[in-house]
Length: 237
Image 1 (cartoon, one colour):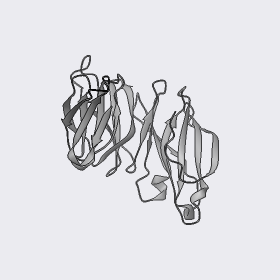
Image 2: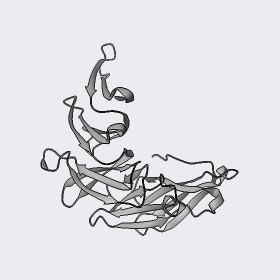
Image 3: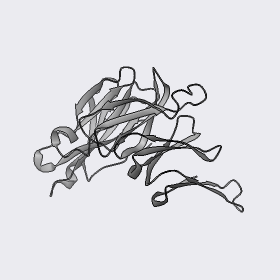
């Protein structure tokens, strides 16, 4: 398993195949380490170094840092997203806490070495966010804008077409102003046909007015919701 030792800028890779003789490799990367996720093959661990405005890429087979990449102001991928880009092949991406930007890079050094660990593209959103998610069987990447201070941005989710990189906005957190509601953390169901999005109601006296809204990924239309939830966040399957 992998341990992010945040302030040190180190990733510790622990091999417990021989539990009586644990092996731990300390891999220097960049400060300060936060969210990380694997590429589609499960070989490369990709982790945000917020303070350095970089993504760090660890080869878990060779147990070493393979590259650092400047992505934008304070990268924050959350659980991250992998997809196939028509130009670059396999890619992964991150949102940013400091600006409305999605940055994605190549993740296939064997078959697409020219794009590996280099920026493949960027897409501007209306505001900074915490999470982006996708699914192998979906044509979309869902992106939140929850860190923007204005309701006309943070209540909306952006849905990116993987082929065209075009964005479609969806108004998720349809709450009165006093609810101070934001939309965040999208999660697919196992089949990749539904996307579940959280609504945080942060206003005083309205914290129990949150919800999870369920969308059809193909049509981007609401198909259900779970109401009366207190700040629902991560949803995992």
